[in-house]
Image (cartoon, rainbow, N blue to C red):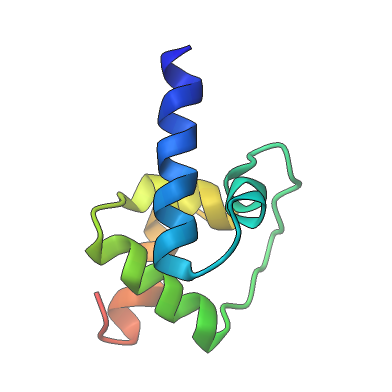
Length: 83
């Protein structure tokens, strides 16, 4: 039950920060979606990643949400100097 509550709170935070519906936030957090090998990051996604990272999400949580590795998230944010 605690995992469901954590997932719910995380989806709520994502929906507030990224300005999307809770359903969209749950979809972004759903780890059952297939992960892409190469995932180009749009400027909007980078801005969202930055907002979520500043709000306290870990690189691991962001990586699960975007289907990337934590190192890729770190590198993309660092490369664009918005870490």
